[in-house]
Length: 376
Image (tube, rainbow, N blue to C red; front, side, top):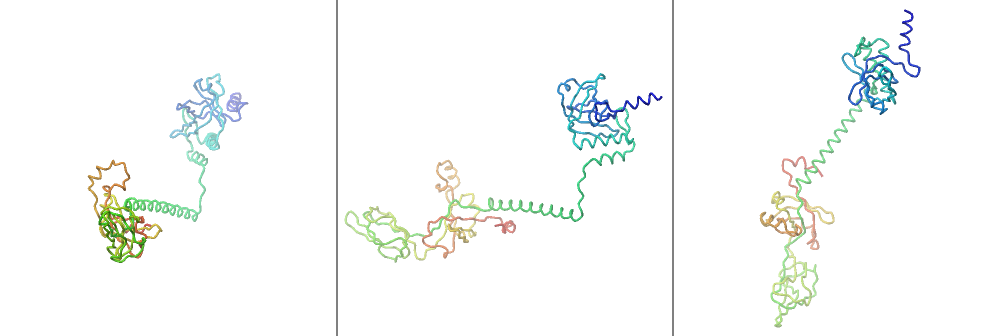
Protein backbone atom coordinates (compact mmCIF):
# COMPACT_ATOMS: atom_id res chain seq x y z
CA UNK A 1 0.00 0.00 0.00
CA UNK A 2 2.78 2.41 0.81
CA UNK A 3 4.33 1.77 -2.59
CA UNK A 4 1.08 2.74 -4.35
CA UNK A 5 0.88 6.00 -2.42
CA UNK A 6 4.40 6.80 -3.46
CA UNK A 7 3.53 6.09 -7.09
CA UNK A 8 0.45 8.37 -6.84
CA UNK A 9 2.57 11.24 -5.57
CA UNK A 10 5.06 10.88 -8.40
CA UNK A 11 2.24 10.64 -10.91
CA UNK A 12 1.02 14.19 -10.24
CA UNK A 13 4.32 15.90 -9.67
CA UNK A 14 5.66 18.32 -12.24
CA UNK A 15 8.15 16.97 -14.69
CA UNK A 16 11.70 18.16 -14.01
CA UNK A 17 11.81 20.32 -17.13
CA UNK A 18 8.41 21.87 -16.62
CA UNK A 19 7.68 25.05 -14.71
CA UNK A 20 4.01 24.16 -14.04
CA UNK A 21 2.44 20.87 -12.87
CA UNK A 22 0.12 19.16 -15.35
CA UNK A 23 -3.49 18.26 -14.43
CA UNK A 24 -5.81 15.68 -15.94
CA UNK A 25 -8.73 18.09 -16.20
CA UNK A 26 -10.93 17.27 -19.24
CA UNK A 27 -10.18 19.78 -22.01
CA UNK A 28 -9.76 20.16 -25.75
CA UNK A 29 -7.61 22.26 -28.05
CA UNK A 30 -9.45 23.70 -31.03
CA UNK A 31 -7.16 24.38 -34.03
CA UNK A 32 -8.45 25.45 -37.45
CA UNK A 33 -12.00 24.63 -36.37
CA UNK A 34 -11.23 21.05 -35.24
CA UNK A 35 -11.08 19.84 -31.63
CA UNK A 36 -8.31 17.59 -30.26
CA UNK A 37 -8.57 15.97 -26.84
CA UNK A 38 -5.90 16.73 -24.24
CA UNK A 39 -4.14 14.18 -22.07
CA UNK A 40 -3.28 16.83 -19.49
CA UNK A 41 -2.61 20.56 -19.35
CA UNK A 42 -1.30 23.38 -17.18
CA UNK A 43 -0.48 27.07 -17.40
CA UNK A 44 2.67 26.16 -19.29
CA UNK A 45 1.34 23.80 -21.96
CA UNK A 46 -0.48 20.57 -22.73
CA UNK A 47 -0.26 17.13 -24.34
CA UNK A 48 -2.54 16.66 -27.36
CA UNK A 49 -3.98 13.38 -28.63
CA UNK A 50 -4.14 12.56 -32.38
CA UNK A 51 -2.58 15.82 -33.61
CA UNK A 52 -1.51 15.50 -37.30
CA UNK A 53 2.21 15.65 -38.11
CA UNK A 54 1.71 18.76 -40.23
CA UNK A 55 1.40 20.86 -37.07
CA UNK A 56 4.76 19.55 -35.82
CA UNK A 57 6.26 20.70 -39.10
CA UNK A 58 4.60 24.13 -38.79
CA UNK A 59 5.80 24.45 -35.16
CA UNK A 60 3.32 27.22 -34.39
CA UNK A 61 -0.47 27.71 -34.45
CA UNK A 62 -3.21 29.69 -32.76
CA UNK A 63 -5.98 27.79 -30.99
CA UNK A 64 -8.62 27.86 -28.28
CA UNK A 65 -8.52 25.91 -25.01
CA UNK A 66 -12.02 24.52 -24.38
CA UNK A 67 -12.91 23.22 -20.89
CA UNK A 68 -16.26 21.33 -21.01
CA UNK A 69 -18.54 21.42 -17.96
CA UNK A 70 -21.75 19.43 -17.61
CA UNK A 71 -23.98 22.33 -18.73
CA UNK A 72 -21.60 24.88 -20.32
CA UNK A 73 -18.08 25.38 -21.66
CA UNK A 74 -15.26 27.72 -20.67
CA UNK A 75 -13.11 28.88 -23.61
CA UNK A 76 -9.69 30.49 -23.41
CA UNK A 77 -9.35 32.08 -26.83
CA UNK A 78 -6.41 32.80 -29.11
CA UNK A 79 -3.67 30.82 -27.40
CA UNK A 80 -0.28 30.86 -29.13
CA UNK A 81 0.76 27.20 -29.40
CA UNK A 82 4.32 25.96 -29.90
CA UNK A 83 4.50 22.25 -30.86
CA UNK A 84 7.60 20.59 -29.36
CA UNK A 85 7.69 16.83 -30.07
CA UNK A 86 5.64 13.65 -30.22
CA UNK A 87 5.81 11.49 -27.10
CA UNK A 88 5.98 7.64 -27.09
CA UNK A 89 2.26 7.47 -26.18
CA UNK A 90 1.39 9.35 -29.39
CA UNK A 91 0.59 12.70 -27.80
CA UNK A 92 2.26 15.91 -28.99
CA UNK A 93 3.84 18.18 -26.41
CA UNK A 94 2.72 21.77 -26.77
CA UNK A 95 3.81 24.96 -24.99
CA UNK A 96 1.57 28.00 -24.37
CA UNK A 97 3.48 31.10 -25.45
CA UNK A 98 2.85 34.75 -24.68
CA UNK A 99 -0.15 34.24 -22.39
CA UNK A 100 -2.09 37.36 -21.55
CA UNK A 101 -3.08 38.17 -17.92
CA UNK A 102 -6.71 37.43 -18.79
CA UNK A 103 -5.85 33.99 -20.22
CA UNK A 104 -3.68 33.11 -17.20
CA UNK A 105 -6.36 34.29 -14.75
CA UNK A 106 -9.13 32.21 -16.36
CA UNK A 107 -7.00 29.05 -16.55
CA UNK A 108 -5.76 29.54 -12.97
CA UNK A 109 -9.35 29.89 -11.70
CA UNK A 110 -10.32 26.54 -13.22
CA UNK A 111 -7.21 24.82 -11.81
CA UNK A 112 -7.78 26.28 -8.32
CA UNK A 113 -11.44 25.23 -8.39
CA UNK A 114 -10.31 21.72 -9.35
CA UNK A 115 -7.74 21.57 -6.56
CA UNK A 116 -10.24 22.91 -3.98
CA UNK A 117 -12.85 20.30 -4.96
CA UNK A 118 -15.38 22.79 -6.33
CA UNK A 119 -15.28 20.78 -9.59
CA UNK A 120 -14.53 17.12 -10.26
CA UNK A 121 -13.49 15.55 -13.56
CA UNK A 122 -15.52 12.79 -15.14
CA UNK A 123 -14.79 10.99 -18.41
CA UNK A 124 -15.41 13.70 -20.99
CA UNK A 125 -16.54 16.71 -18.97
CA UNK A 126 -16.31 18.44 -15.60
CA UNK A 127 -19.04 18.26 -13.01
CA UNK A 128 -19.58 21.30 -10.79
CA UNK A 129 -19.86 20.25 -7.15
CA UNK A 130 -20.13 23.77 -5.69
CA UNK A 131 -21.45 25.91 -8.55
CA UNK A 132 -21.47 29.11 -6.48
CA UNK A 133 -17.76 28.78 -5.72
CA UNK A 134 -16.93 28.28 -9.40
CA UNK A 135 -19.11 31.20 -10.50
CA UNK A 136 -17.47 33.49 -7.97
CA UNK A 137 -14.02 32.38 -9.07
CA UNK A 138 -14.72 32.89 -12.77
CA UNK A 139 -16.48 36.23 -12.30
CA UNK A 140 -13.67 37.46 -10.06
CA UNK A 141 -11.28 37.16 -13.01
CA UNK A 142 -13.37 39.47 -15.15
CA UNK A 143 -12.46 43.17 -15.01
CA UNK A 144 -15.17 45.24 -13.35
CA UNK A 145 -15.82 48.83 -14.35
CA UNK A 146 -14.99 51.41 -11.70
CA UNK A 147 -17.98 52.37 -9.59
CA UNK A 148 -19.13 55.97 -9.76
CA UNK A 149 -20.74 57.96 -7.02
CA UNK A 150 -24.35 59.09 -7.35
CA UNK A 151 -23.34 62.65 -8.27
CA UNK A 152 -20.81 61.45 -10.86
CA UNK A 153 -23.39 59.16 -12.45
CA UNK A 154 -25.96 61.97 -12.57
CA UNK A 155 -23.45 64.37 -14.16
CA UNK A 156 -22.47 61.70 -16.68
CA UNK A 157 -26.10 61.11 -17.70
CA UNK A 158 -26.81 64.84 -17.96
CA UNK A 159 -23.70 65.29 -20.12
CA UNK A 160 -24.78 62.43 -22.41
CA UNK A 161 -28.28 63.91 -22.74
CA UNK A 162 -26.93 67.39 -23.51
CA UNK A 163 -24.55 65.96 -26.09
CA UNK A 164 -27.36 63.93 -27.65
CA UNK A 165 -29.67 66.96 -27.91
CA UNK A 166 -26.87 69.14 -29.30
CA UNK A 167 -26.04 66.62 -32.01
CA UNK A 168 -29.71 66.06 -32.81
CA UNK A 169 -30.40 69.79 -32.90
CA UNK A 170 -27.40 70.50 -35.14
CA UNK A 171 -28.43 67.79 -37.58
CA UNK A 172 -32.02 69.04 -37.61
CA UNK A 173 -30.91 72.64 -38.26
CA UNK A 174 -28.65 71.45 -41.08
CA UNK A 175 -31.49 69.52 -42.73
CA UNK A 176 -33.96 72.41 -42.35
CA UNK A 177 -31.45 74.92 -43.71
CA UNK A 178 -30.73 72.65 -46.70
CA UNK A 179 -34.48 72.27 -47.28
CA UNK A 180 -35.02 76.02 -47.15
CA UNK A 181 -32.01 76.92 -49.32
CA UNK A 182 -32.18 74.20 -51.96
CA UNK A 183 -35.90 73.46 -52.21
CA UNK A 184 -37.85 76.52 -51.05
CA UNK A 185 -35.57 79.33 -52.27
CA UNK A 186 -35.53 80.30 -55.95
CA UNK A 187 -32.54 82.12 -57.44
CA UNK A 188 -33.24 83.76 -60.84
CA UNK A 189 -30.75 83.12 -63.59
CA UNK A 190 -29.72 86.78 -63.89
CA UNK A 191 -31.00 90.03 -62.38
CA UNK A 192 -30.17 93.68 -63.03
CA UNK A 193 -31.48 97.17 -62.27
CA UNK A 194 -33.57 98.59 -65.09
CA UNK A 195 -35.88 101.52 -65.84
CA UNK A 196 -38.25 102.61 -68.60
CA UNK A 197 -35.80 104.24 -71.01
CA UNK A 198 -36.97 106.56 -73.80
CA UNK A 199 -34.84 106.05 -76.91
CA UNK A 200 -34.33 108.92 -79.37
CA UNK A 201 -33.94 107.62 -82.95
CA UNK A 202 -32.86 109.37 -86.14
CA UNK A 203 -35.70 110.09 -88.64
CA UNK A 204 -33.41 109.90 -91.68
CA UNK A 205 -30.06 108.67 -92.94
CA UNK A 206 -27.10 111.02 -92.67
CA UNK A 207 -24.23 112.31 -90.51
CA UNK A 208 -24.80 113.05 -86.81
CA UNK A 209 -23.60 116.29 -85.27
CA UNK A 210 -23.96 116.20 -81.47
CA UNK A 211 -24.28 119.15 -79.13
CA UNK A 212 -22.00 119.39 -76.12
CA UNK A 213 -24.03 117.06 -73.93
CA UNK A 214 -22.77 114.36 -71.56
CA UNK A 215 -24.30 111.26 -70.07
CA UNK A 216 -25.81 111.92 -66.66
CA UNK A 217 -26.79 115.44 -67.68
CA UNK A 218 -30.33 116.70 -67.10
CA UNK A 219 -32.35 117.45 -70.21
CA UNK A 220 -35.52 119.41 -70.76
CA UNK A 221 -38.27 118.30 -73.08
CA UNK A 222 -37.47 119.63 -76.55
CA UNK A 223 -33.85 120.42 -75.74
CA UNK A 224 -31.60 119.89 -78.80
CA UNK A 225 -29.13 117.02 -78.54
CA UNK A 226 -27.77 117.41 -82.05
CA UNK A 227 -28.83 117.18 -85.69
CA UNK A 228 -28.60 114.87 -88.70
CA UNK A 229 -27.54 116.12 -92.14
CA UNK A 230 -28.64 113.93 -95.05
CA UNK A 231 -26.59 113.52 -98.27
CA UNK A 232 -29.05 115.93 -99.88
CA UNK A 233 -28.07 118.60 -97.34
CA UNK A 234 -31.35 118.20 -95.55
CA UNK A 235 -30.85 118.84 -91.83
CA UNK A 236 -33.10 117.64 -88.96
CA UNK A 237 -32.64 118.74 -85.34
CA UNK A 238 -32.68 115.93 -82.74
CA UNK A 239 -34.65 117.17 -79.73
CA UNK A 240 -35.10 115.33 -76.44
CA UNK A 241 -38.64 113.86 -76.48
CA UNK A 242 -38.96 114.08 -72.68
CA UNK A 243 -37.39 115.84 -69.74
CA UNK A 244 -35.05 113.66 -67.75
CA UNK A 245 -31.50 112.33 -67.51
CA UNK A 246 -29.33 111.50 -70.49
CA UNK A 247 -28.47 107.89 -69.70
CA UNK A 248 -26.53 106.93 -72.85
CA UNK A 249 -25.29 108.15 -76.24
CA UNK A 250 -25.26 105.39 -78.82
CA UNK A 251 -23.32 107.27 -81.55
CA UNK A 252 -20.27 109.49 -81.87
CA UNK A 253 -20.05 112.95 -83.35
CA UNK A 254 -19.66 112.79 -87.16
CA UNK A 255 -20.84 109.17 -87.35
CA UNK A 256 -23.03 108.02 -90.24
CA UNK A 257 -26.42 106.62 -89.18
CA UNK A 258 -29.35 105.05 -90.94
CA UNK A 259 -32.97 105.92 -90.49
CA UNK A 260 -34.28 104.44 -87.22
CA UNK A 261 -30.87 104.00 -85.56
CA UNK A 262 -30.80 104.88 -81.80
CA UNK A 263 -29.10 108.13 -80.95
CA UNK A 264 -29.59 108.55 -77.20
CA UNK A 265 -31.31 106.93 -74.23
CA UNK A 266 -33.13 109.21 -71.80
CA UNK A 267 -34.54 108.35 -68.40
CA UNK A 268 -37.74 110.37 -67.88
CA UNK A 269 -37.87 112.52 -64.78
CA UNK A 270 -40.81 110.51 -63.41
CA UNK A 271 -39.35 107.12 -64.35
CA UNK A 272 -39.25 104.38 -61.73
CA UNK A 273 -36.36 102.01 -61.16
CA UNK A 274 -37.01 98.30 -60.89
CA UNK A 275 -35.21 94.98 -61.10
CA UNK A 276 -35.62 92.71 -64.08
CA UNK A 277 -34.87 89.02 -63.55
CA UNK A 278 -34.66 86.10 -65.94
CA UNK A 279 -35.94 82.91 -64.36
CA UNK A 280 -36.28 79.32 -65.55
CA UNK A 281 -39.76 78.15 -66.57
CA UNK A 282 -39.84 75.51 -63.81
CA UNK A 283 -38.99 78.14 -61.16
CA UNK A 284 -41.36 80.78 -62.53
CA UNK A 285 -44.26 78.39 -61.87
CA UNK A 286 -43.54 78.71 -58.12
CA UNK A 287 -43.60 82.53 -58.13
CA UNK A 288 -46.80 84.56 -57.76
CA UNK A 289 -47.64 88.22 -58.39
CA UNK A 290 -47.18 90.36 -55.30
CA UNK A 291 -44.68 87.95 -53.79
CA UNK A 292 -41.98 89.52 -51.63
CA UNK A 293 -38.36 88.98 -52.67
CA UNK A 294 -34.95 89.88 -51.29
CA UNK A 295 -32.69 92.05 -53.47
CA UNK A 296 -28.98 92.23 -52.66
CA UNK A 297 -26.93 95.06 -54.28
CA UNK A 298 -23.25 94.71 -55.25
CA UNK A 299 -22.23 96.78 -52.21
CA UNK A 300 -24.02 94.37 -49.86
CA UNK A 301 -27.17 96.40 -49.27
CA UNK A 302 -30.32 94.34 -48.92
CA UNK A 303 -33.80 95.65 -49.73
CA UNK A 304 -37.20 94.08 -50.00
CA UNK A 305 -38.84 93.99 -53.40
CA UNK A 306 -42.15 92.80 -54.80
CA UNK A 307 -42.98 90.92 -58.00
CA UNK A 308 -45.29 93.15 -60.08
CA UNK A 309 -45.11 91.42 -63.46
CA UNK A 310 -44.35 87.95 -64.83
CA UNK A 311 -43.69 87.83 -68.56
CA UNK A 312 -43.90 84.34 -69.99
CA UNK A 313 -41.28 83.29 -72.48
CA UNK A 314 -41.76 80.79 -75.32
CA UNK A 315 -43.51 77.55 -74.49
CA UNK A 316 -41.68 74.62 -72.99
CA UNK A 317 -41.87 72.69 -76.26
CA UNK A 318 -39.68 75.35 -77.88
CA UNK A 319 -37.30 75.22 -74.91
CA UNK A 320 -36.98 71.45 -75.30
CA UNK A 321 -36.43 71.87 -79.04
CA UNK A 322 -33.48 74.17 -78.36
CA UNK A 323 -32.11 72.22 -75.40
CA UNK A 324 -29.15 70.97 -77.45
CA UNK A 325 -28.10 74.46 -78.58
CA UNK A 326 -24.36 74.74 -77.78
CA UNK A 327 -24.53 78.24 -76.23
CA UNK A 328 -24.87 79.37 -72.60
CA UNK A 329 -28.35 78.98 -71.16
CA UNK A 330 -28.69 82.62 -70.22
CA UNK A 331 -28.40 83.60 -73.90
CA UNK A 332 -31.39 81.46 -74.87
CA UNK A 333 -34.59 83.49 -74.41
CA UNK A 334 -36.68 80.34 -74.87
CA UNK A 335 -35.24 78.90 -71.65
CA UNK A 336 -36.68 81.41 -69.17
CA UNK A 337 -39.46 83.83 -68.20
CA UNK A 338 -38.99 87.43 -67.06
CA UNK A 339 -39.90 89.03 -63.72
CA UNK A 340 -40.36 92.72 -63.03
CA UNK A 341 -39.59 93.47 -59.39
CA UNK A 342 -40.57 96.72 -57.69
CA UNK A 343 -37.93 98.17 -55.31
CA UNK A 344 -37.70 101.27 -53.05
CA UNK A 345 -36.83 104.25 -55.26
CA UNK A 346 -34.65 105.96 -52.66
CA UNK A 347 -32.22 103.02 -52.78
CA UNK A 348 -31.35 103.46 -56.49
CA UNK A 349 -29.72 106.16 -58.57
CA UNK A 350 -29.39 106.60 -62.32
CA UNK A 351 -25.80 105.32 -62.20
CA UNK A 352 -27.07 102.00 -60.86
CA UNK A 353 -29.04 101.17 -64.01
CA UNK A 354 -27.60 98.05 -65.62
CA UNK A 355 -25.88 96.88 -62.41
CA UNK A 356 -26.28 93.20 -61.59
CA UNK A 357 -28.00 92.27 -58.34
CA UNK A 358 -28.84 89.03 -56.52
CA UNK A 359 -32.49 88.12 -56.07
CA UNK A 360 -33.72 85.48 -53.60
CA UNK A 361 -37.34 84.39 -53.73
CA UNK A 362 -38.76 82.49 -50.77
CA UNK A 363 -41.39 80.00 -52.01
CA UNK A 364 -41.84 78.12 -48.71
CA UNK A 365 -45.40 76.77 -48.36
CA UNK A 366 -47.53 78.58 -45.78
CA UNK A 367 -47.73 75.57 -43.46
CA UNK A 368 -43.91 75.38 -43.25
CA UNK A 369 -43.17 79.07 -42.78
CA UNK A 370 -43.61 79.00 -38.96
CA UNK A 371 -40.88 76.32 -38.89
CA UNK A 372 -38.46 77.66 -41.52
CA UNK A 373 -39.17 81.37 -41.07
CA UNK A 374 -36.79 81.82 -38.14
CA UNK A 375 -33.83 80.23 -39.94
CA UNK A 376 -31.14 82.69 -41.13
